[in-house]
Image (cartoon, rainbow, N blue to C red; front, top):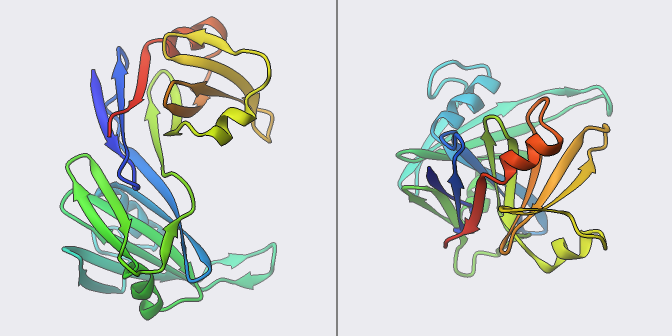
Amino acid sequence: MAVIHRALDSRQFQLAGQLDLGQPATSVLGVSAAGRLHEFTAGLAALGAEVAAGLGGSGPGAGFDEELSYQGGALRIGRLHPYDPQIKLTEDLLVACWQGERHCLVTQLYAAGTTDLLGLLRTLRIEEHPDGLAVRPALAGGSEFTGPATVIKQVPALGLLEMSPLTSEHVKTLPSWGGLRTPAGELFADNLTDGKPYYVLAAPDTWTTLVPAAGLAGDRLAGQVGRLRIQLVG
C-alpha cells in the first residue's frame, strides 16, 4: 500500500509498506507576518467539524458566527473566551476555518477581529490539491514560513508519526553513535518530558518522530518500522 500526503508548504510525502496507511493526515506550518507568529493546520474537511464542536456546535457550520466566501472556499469564523487558570485571565480567541471541496485550513488569533484575520490571509494564497492543501506567500504580502511544514499521521499498530524534510539542523541533533539500522532508515530512541519513549527515524531525505503504539518496543517496534518507507516525492 502507498499513499501521498501534501504538506502545507507543497512538499509531498509518500508512505509505502505492508501497514494500514489509510488514516488521514494533517499538516502544520508556522507563518510569520507583521512581526507575529501564526500556526496553520490543514486536514480533511472533517477537521472543520471538530473545530466547530470545540466552539460548541454540532453541525458542519454550527459554532461559527460568521461566514465569508474567500479564495474559492468558505471562510468560517468563531470566537471563544476560555478562562486560563494559570494567568487568571479570560482569553479572547478568534478561530477561523477555511473550507474547500475536500480539505480545510484552521488557524487561531488572539485579541483579533475579522479585519485582522483577513489581513493575515491576504498575505497567503490557498491552493487545494487532491492530496491536500498548500499555502504560498502572496507577492509583496509580507509573510514568510518559519520553517518546513510537518505532516502528522496515525498508523495503526505502529504509532503517531510526525514527518518533515531532513535538514542539516536535524543531523546536528543526532548523537555521535549510530542508531539502529532498519530498512526504513536509522532509528534513535529518546524520551518525552513526561518520561515516555519516542523515536526518531532518519531516512535519506526525511526526518520522522514516532510515538509508538501502546506496548510496542524493542524488536517488535524495529520490525514494524522496517515495514515502512517514507520519502519526499515532490
